[in-house]
Every structure is written in structure tokens, then in C-alpha cells.
Image (tube, rainbow, N blue to C red; front, side, top):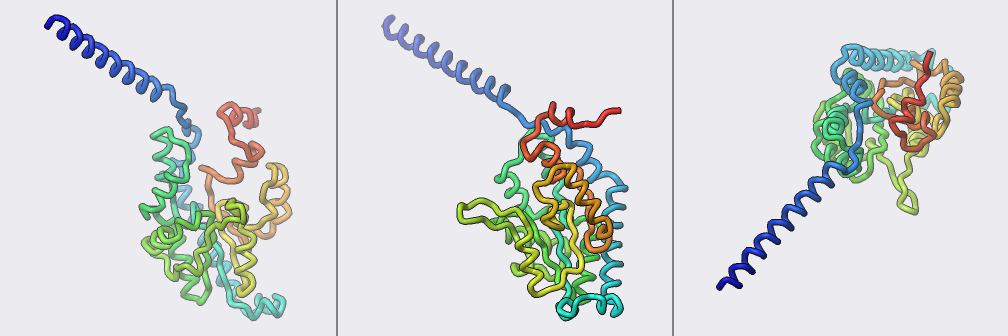
Length: 281
């Protein structure tokens, strides 16, 4: 009996010890697992969510768009266009994320949880269909529709997100939203995403005259800005100085975008790299 009792207690000790070892290892792994430090974007997210100035800039952008669209209906302006363009129906092309839909809550969640961006989490947020409209977006785009203008939503969301995106746009009040005018990112023969929007803009231009292009990223407007350095992006903006507020209208987005990618040569930045990029007095 004594031998059986000793074996029993030995088993108990080994089991408890092994359980404690596993628990400690798991706890240690959780503590040492690399977490994403998103603190640098807290101010940008707070600005988008809490600053009246941000709302003012958004309303300003869509007010300008309203004026430019009205001006395009002036027959004098239309007559200045090439004849083939005069006959085409009008279109307004807009990006979706941070141009007409506000995804700052998803960014805020990642900040609080110290999580990196993942496609799975991004899809999950989209499936919730909870993004709110950017101030002024619904009124302007519905006004354009009322004037007989076709609105195209050209986004780099993935095709798997299409129905959720359409549902979200409808839920916040956008009219004339469907599979034909919500154009998502496609993939090439190697299943690699095609992020440039130029083919989709050209596709729209075959049947429509694009009166306005609106986005929070310069790549939403033209391929001349794509994969360019900071200096080259500055130069292209300068070349197009007469287009801003006329044919092209930009929405503010300090949270993310090609502007940040350009700073770090389109590579993943480090905290040290971000600080090194700052211009000091």
C-alpha cells in the first residue's frame, strides 16, 4: 500500500509541476510576444474622431465638389470640352475608406489592443457594416445622383468584401449603390492584388466623362503619384496645382496612406525610422 501511495503522490507532484511549467511558459510567451506599437497614430485618430476642424475640412471638400459639379452644368463650360467628351454622361469617382466611410474605430481598436493590421481583422470590421459616413459625403453624392450623375465607388477593398461594402454604403444613406458602381481591387494571374486604380478609371472613362475625382490618397486621383518618393510626390503636386479643388479634391487622412509609405521607401517603418524622418529646427 505504501508503494502505491508513494506512486500516487509522485504522479500528483509531476502533474502539478508540469501544469505549472506549461502555465509559466504560456504566460511568459504572452508577455514576450511582439505587440504592435500604434501609439504614434493616436493623435491622428483622435483628430479624425474628435476635432471639429476635421469635420470642417470634410464639409469644405464636399461643398467645393458641389460647386464644381454645378459649374460643369453650365453650357459655356461644356462647350469648351472636346466634342466626344460633351456627349458623354457625367460621372463622379470617389474612394471609399476615409473618403466617404469612416473606419477610425477599427484603427482605434488596434491601438488599444496593440495589434498589427491583418486582413482577417479588416474583413471582420467590414462585415460588421458599422462604418459611419464622412461628414458631407452623403449629401453631396446623393445630390449628384439627383442631377443624373453616375457615382462610382473605386476602392482597394478586396472582392470578398463587396457585399458588406455595398450594405454599409446603403446603410449610411448613399443612393444608387450596387455591384456595377462599386469597383473593388482585383488580382492578377499570380493572384497578386492589383492596387493601382488606373485601369478602373479608364474603364469608367470609356462610357462616362469623369467630372470629379475625390480621395484621401493621391493614388485615388492619378497614377502619376504611384510609388513615388516624397520629393517626387511634392513635384507632381506642384505640377498639378491648377487641378486641386477643381478636377481633384482631397480629403484629410493623417492615420495612414501612401504619404507614409513614401517616407520609408515603401518598406515597413520602425519607431526609430519614424523619428529619424522628422525635420528638426
